[in-house]
Length: 302
Image 1 (cartoon, one colour):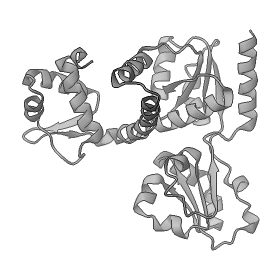
Image 2 (cartoon, helix red, strand yellow; image 1 turned 135 degrees about the vertical axis):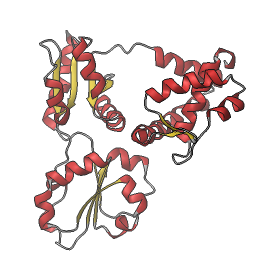
Image 3 (spheres, rainbow, N blue to C red; image 1 turned 180 degrees about the vertical axis):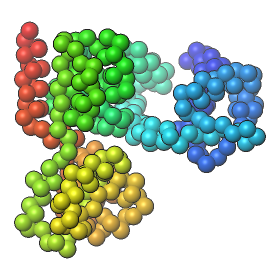
Image 4 (cartoon, one colour; image 1 turned 180 degrees about the horizontal axis):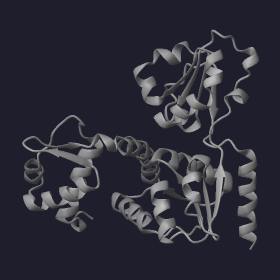
């Protein structure tokens, strides 16, 4: 299988390795990459130029190039997906598959056309992954995930002409401008109703309630949605998973901890000593989910 990799591909794989696993504060040299791979420097420059245009790296004359901090979200999400892929690879190896067979399986999966007209649109890779996984569990069908930037482009160019497009109310406002009469846009509620997850009549005003969110954007939404509740309960704290990694004392002193199901499943050790743990899903829209289930059933019959 190694023989199928061109020099351009080898260079790109090395640069991707630096992007996903490298030190974001370190400056790298193109000459070092060329020497390491025994590849012509012009080949390295050509590949690097393309990747720089895509936003992976920034360069500084006289110093070299480094990872673009504006792409950290993609870098962080990659490691979450990598963890899931590693589990699949481990299971396949346990089932007797060899490395060449694994490479073939992933190559086939990348190039396979997804036979579905049900799409899920969200704002970033992590929410896209979590939402898609939950929807496939609810509906029992394959869902094609699309970032909202890509969905808007496809709608504008007429590539999404029919089917069912599931999204969130936050994305709905941006998608409606490009909607057509054929494709159906179905929004779902995602902000968990904290007042229904916790019985606040039994909560002391001095109790610490810690809500661990998936990212900074969701943290801000929680703060905006529950600013009135936060005025009454001064120790209602909204943080991201990254915040907790730096301030683990917060999780130890909290009376109640709320977090996304996916975050709990991926970080069970972190939550192992929490006494009152409340886990919620990406979607909080029972009526909407039930309507989607009926729609999928009707589509199967037709």
